[in-house]
Image 1: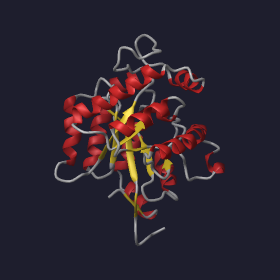
Image 2: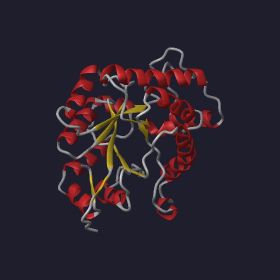
Image 3: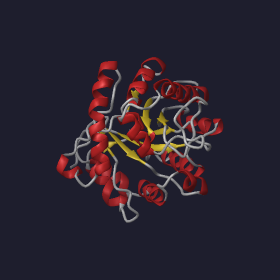
Image 4: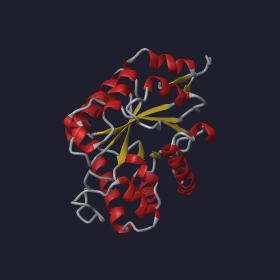
Amino acid sequence: MNESVTRRIWLCADDYGIAPGVNTAIHDLVERGRLNATSVMVVAPSFTRAEAEQLASLNAGSKRVAIGLHLTLTGPLKPLTAQYAPVADGAFLPLTTTLRLAAQQRLEMAALSAEIRAQFEAFADVFGRAPDFVDGHQHVHLFPQVRHAVLDTITWMAPQAWVRQCGSNVSFTRRISDPKGLLIDWLSREFRARAARHGVNTNPAFAGTYTYRLDADFSRIFPRFLEGMPKDGLIMCHPGHVDAELERLDPLTTLREQEYAYFCSDAFPAALAAQGVTLN
C-alpha cells in the first residue's frame, strides 16, 4: 500500500523510568528517529531529575519526542502521597484488585485524586511544564472512578494535553483472540464520551496490545498494528533492555528486547512505508 501522501502516527514507548535498561533503550530509539512519543512513570525509583533532563534534551533545537505522564496506580510501585489508600505493604494494589475495586466504586476518591495530582505535580517539577499527553500504566486511567479523577485533573493542570483512549479501529473478529484488547476497547467507550464532555482531546485510534507470550514474534505482529491506522492514531510499545530492576518491578521482560531489536531493524521503516505512515 504505497501512498503518495503519508499519514503521521504516534509510536509511544510506555514505562520510561521503570528501569535503567528501559530508559536507555527508549532514549536510543528516539535518537534514531524510531519513536516519537514516550510516557514517564514519575513514581518509579529509576526516574530521577537527571533522567528527566536527559529525556528533555532530546528536544533541544527541534521537537523529536512528545513526553507524557504515565499515571501509575498498581503495584509493586508505591504512591507518592502518604494518604493514598488502599495499599498493600505500602504499595499500590495489584492490577486485578484495583480494577475490581474501581468497578465496584470502592476506591477512595479523595485519596485517588490527591495521588493523581501529585503525579502531575511531580512531572511539572522535573520538566518545568505540563505533560504533552496522559496515559496510564496497565491502562488504569480508563477504569471507573479513576477516569473521573484523571479527566478532572487534566482540565485544570494540563488543559493543552491530549489523553490516550484505547479503542481500536480493528474489527471485533480480528480482536477476539486478544482479550486484553477487547477489555480496554470496551472501557474506552465511556472514557471517550467523558473526555469529549470535558473538552479533552483523544487519539482517534489505538493499537499495540498482544498476548505477550514468550513465543510471540513481534516482527510479525507489529505490521498488523499499522493496518488502517489513521492520521494521529497511536501504537503503544514497550522496548527495553532487561536488567535486575525491570525484573523486580514488571513481568514484561524479554519481549522488550525483541521489540527494541525490531525497531532498530530495517524491517521497521519498511513496514511504515508499506502502510503509508510516518513518525515525522
